[in-house]
Image 1 (cartoon, rainbow, N blue to C red):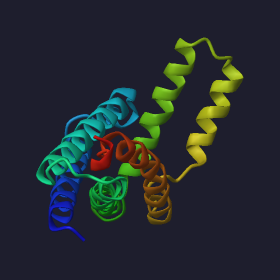
Image 2: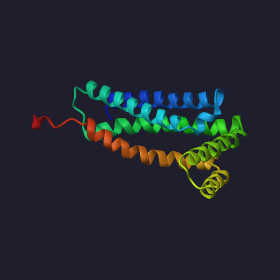
Image 3: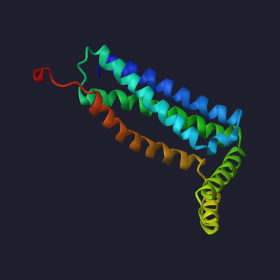
Image 4: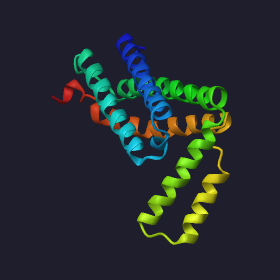
Length: 176
């Protein structure tokens, strides 16, 4: 494997993981309501896109603009797996070792924000109650659910990685 691809993938994976951890820490230490915010999700998606654009642009430039689809996807994949694993390991530690009551607090925030959002969109009370009960039954922060989420995140992120790789790959030199 190319050293540039490996180095950039690892570096940006660590950066992505640290940004995710910092975001979670901010929500935990400053304002738990952020856990139920659509703004947090939007922020994470924007950061994720920007970070990957920077990663792939930098790597392509360092490879003298010779960047195959496989190399672009490999760079993305290394970065994504490192970042996601760091984030999930941190969340497992935070929710299951450091603050055992945090999952319940976040669940309450999620129930309130879901209820408020559904009310805002005019959902019937019966549907709001049904949605809140589903959240109440869930255990999204158990170790098993977090590991399951890790694999789902890798699969979904890989789809985006394929798109990014298609965008950032170089055309073969014989096409110029």
